Structure formats: C-alpha cells, structure tokens
Amino acid sequence: MTFINKIGGLAISSGVAISLLGQAAAATFVYTLGDHPDGNAAPQHAYGLRLDSAGLFLSLDQAGADVKLTYDDVAMTAIITGTGVSNTSGPTFGDSYTISYSLTGVSALGTGFFKATGGTGTVTNDSTSDVINLVGKQASSGYAFIFDNDAHRLGGHTIGTDIVGRGWLEPIAPGTAMPNDWLFVAEPVPVPAAAVLFGTALLGFGAARKRRTAT
Image 1 (tube, helix red, strand yellow):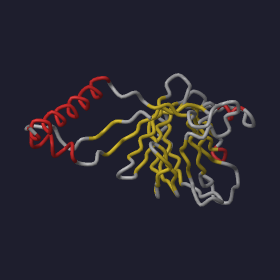
Image 2: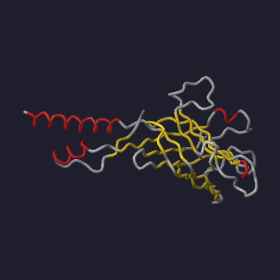
Image 3: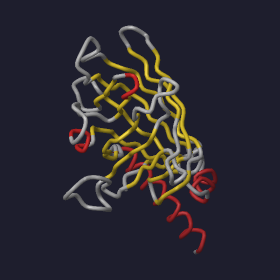
C-alpha cells in the first residue's frame, strides 16, 4: 500500500541519521476520493457525500472537485478535506463546497485502513458561505465510519484491492429521519519519486554505517 514515512527531522550527522532510522516510523496515508458507483442505484444523483435532510448531494468527481482523506496510523487521526461540487438539481447545482470532517475514536483495520466511532465537521457553500454542520452517527456496529479495502457494494470488484469509505451522519434538521451518509471510493496518492529515493538513501546509509562499525 502506498504510504509516506514521516521523519521527525533531517539528518545532519551520521549519529542523527542512525538515531532516526532506529525509531519506529510513523506512516501517513493519503487518498484521493471519488463517487461510489452505487450512489447511482437508488438516489437520482451520483455522490460521495449525501445530505438528504439538506437536499444536497456532493460529487467528488465533478469538474472542480478535489477531496482527500489523510490517515495517520500512529497519532490515530483521520480527516477528509477538500472541495466537493453540488450535483443536486436546483439553484445550488454546480456550486463548490468546502469539506472539512475529522473522524474520532479511530482504530486500525490493517495497514492504511481504519474505523471510527464518531466524527465532526462542516460543509460550506463557497458562493453563499452557508454552513452545514456534520456529526457522525453510530450504526448498529458501534461505528460511525469504516474505511477499508473490502470492495463494499462494488459488484464485480475485488476484495483486497478496491477501497471504499462509508459513514453515517446525524440528520441536519432535528426530528427528521432522512439519510445522510458518506459513500465513496478511494485511490492512494502516489509517493513522489524524490521521497522514495530519500528514504532509500537513508536506509542505505544506515546499513553502510553498521557494516563499518562491525569491521
């Protein structure tokens, strides 16, 4: 799985390099999100985030959309940020919305994947500045969000390779029972070649240092 190793600082001497290499590396995973094809099955609009009680469907694939999920498996934090585009018929069609949603109660499901017991955030219309508050809602499983490579509701796709995020949200208006949920697919953001080379160089430096010390 694609990931980016975080190093607490740059190596400025051989002693610092060896010290950094000896520490457990924290991994930050970054994914680009897109509309889940199942979003076309029942609703009338493709979406990655559906807010029925606000009459809003946000596409993560439309032109102008760019939404990322960032997961740190050491700090156990996960956040969804970026711009979604309204795919709802009416006056907001085509409007861009700034998305910021932080997952809480995060626990690992394996390398690069997780589940969460809650979440909070906002969706803001970039044209009108109208804000919708988002609050995670636990399903019967006790979780409000799951992010896994289990090909959830992706007929004909492969478990272990197809990544899906899904989560549930409290109604926007109190007393309503209309569904509000996340449902999207994800692709890992490739690690830049320079980062890979830098990490390989550090590992090689550490190995060479150990060989010299041993002799």
